[in-house]
Image 1 (cartoon, one colour):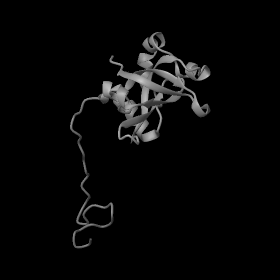
Image 2 (tube, helix red, strand yellow):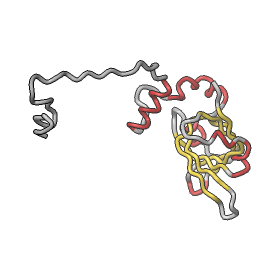
Image 3 (cartoon, helix red, strand yellow):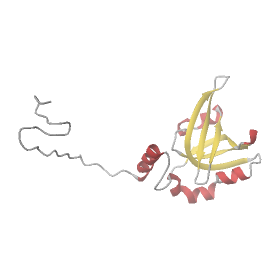
Image 4 (cartoon, one colour):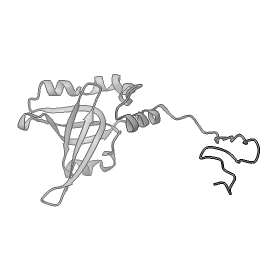
Length: 158
């Protein structure tokens, strides 16, 4: 270090006054609200400033049931719920067909959605975390846990 002229780990050259280091960043466009929210979720594990579903809240209230209502009345019936995909776990069944277990959350609660191959084939590109979707399916209340078995899943387009 002495032969290079460095005094210490953070010091500048030892021969004279240290030169100030300046940094400049290239201009960049401002991050969108959805990008900032995804960064919050990635870094903190939750949304702090708002939730991505807030801008869809009014239309979802008109078009589908809230997850809490489905859980409060888990009688087997057909439902339409909307929310954001929080997790996607793909498995292969014994018969060799793909199947998904998908976590879906709205502003009120979370629920697991079971997606069989027939429903996956209808719209295979929609099964990605953080996408906002409508799920059409039936309520399944086996083992005391309410789930939705999906017949179809469609992306909400703003």
